[in-house]
Image (tube, rainbow, N blue to C red; front, side):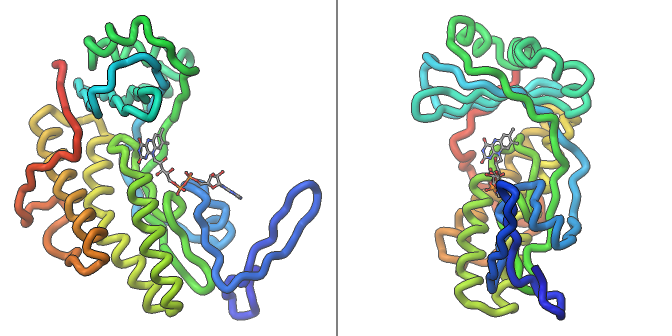
Length: 273
Ligand SMILES: Cc1cc2nc3c(=O)[nH]c(=O)nc-3n(C[C@H](O)[C@H](O)[C@H](O)COP(=O)(O)OP(=O)(O)OC[C@H]3O[C@@H](n4cnc5c(N)ncnc54)[C@H](O)[C@@H]3O)c2cc1C
């Protein structure tokens, strides 16, 4: 819903054959990368990634929890993410290969990638119970405008990047906090600052993730990308933990001007080839 000046004034919710108008001073689209709010408002992305990966994932039970592991081989990657009771394992490659070869038999596609990229994991998985496989064909990263008159976008609705760096939930929570503070301030300037900070904290992560999702790297380049990724994450943590006081403008998108930090956020990486 909009007023005669074009300001968004609420939403119309449809369900069970009934449409209901809900008036709002601010409509927030937290509705994912395919955001209905963004499309109804007519917001177009102003940054779009160039690469997207395809992912096959399952949850396995009975594996020993040895922490996060990221494995890489040319054109492929495997991630091991312990959860409360199970271990989430994803196998990723280019979206093109996923569409051409793997989507027709997700179990075989998963085994093919894990067998080459992480043979020891493949052996450990042999006897483990696995949940039904799920596939994700990929989606290019996007940055959409984060706000306008009467509306704002948060999480994947405003900023989506390839899941290969497994950082979307962190950024969605980060931006929910930033947006909540801006909404409480209640001014256009506060909302403009929300978008500015979101972008300053995100563009490096976005760019690095996009290159990792190309699967066109060799191991030295991949190592350099992860070093930069770690630096970007550290910058993000410093900003969040300082309540926003930490500068977000201290270097270029790939961290070239910043000191190299040793933390790799708990990721252990191995390359089988
Ligand atoms: C295959 C894959 C693996 C990933 N792995 C990781 C990972 O390991 N770690 C990580 O941090 N991130 C990961 N991500 C990214 C992460 O899932 C997202 O960044 C995160 O879920 C974004 O949260 P969100 O709330 O913005 O959007 P979403 O989680 O997409 O939630 C949007 C919600 O809005 C609802 N919705 C949509 N349209 C409407 C509508 N019209 N009306 C009402 N409700 C609506 C949807 O049903 C949904 O519940 C992964 C993503 C993918 C695709």
